[in-house]
Length: 360
Image (cartoon, rainbow, N blue to C red):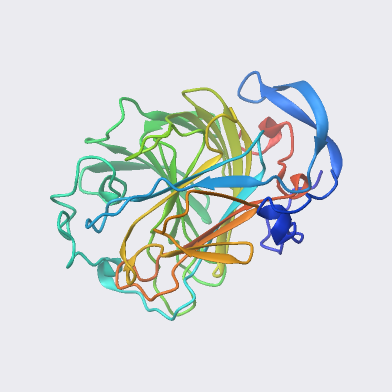
């Protein structure tokens, strides 16, 4: 099977009625087999059954109001019956913006966080993900296009570190940072951070003429526990195939995931093949909203429906979820919109055995 990581459009989604559970779903498109992980790189077939061209996810609203500008009060786990293949895509906000120092973080209305993140609550905030004062980082790979740094953090909130392996060399740390060269410029901006608690931050290369853009919302890829303030799933191991780049991730609670990155000036996209228990979320969206205009996200779009992100909805089904800002935000102005999309198996399944990928 040929692996394609381009940013070409995926096939059309199911109808809005089918996605929302109010109409018939399409006929099964193929026979597929479920795989049980046996070791880091081997699987055992346990069952075969027809699957739908697109798995329907259910988004659950676990969000709450806050006055803290860096508290992740937007908490939306997405659950599927069985493992769904999915994409996480970061795109620039639709409104015009320019890069600003400090990413334009606005703490003027915050009742708990200062600009340096002092005074933030001990749990449930993005301050730990953004803080760099107590980081110690080492470069573990650099081929002139992809540069990987692995960082340890003295105040890391979970009990252990993760092991990161590239070309047979193993390292320990709490966050893996990828800087990738812009194709038409001698610049290597940060595009991806994977944290040992399962959080992933993703952003595209900046538009031409813009030095860099901000991180903002995050996703937890993996079967995160449903903690109301700070869900997490501890990562034990990451094996990197740096040329693609691709990542094979193993979780402390059981299960694995494999994902590959494509990035350009328009978007950054992770194609994800999960292999972990389905009784927990497939992926969890995490962000912040204090008010429209002071938020990393203010609307959720699915099908033909658009909802304020912190409204009274509880659980809704769909195949594609767009977490975006409809209102210009003075906080992290250039931070990306995030789309999570259940995809056709053929477009996302990674080549097997994964161990044959360079670097694994």
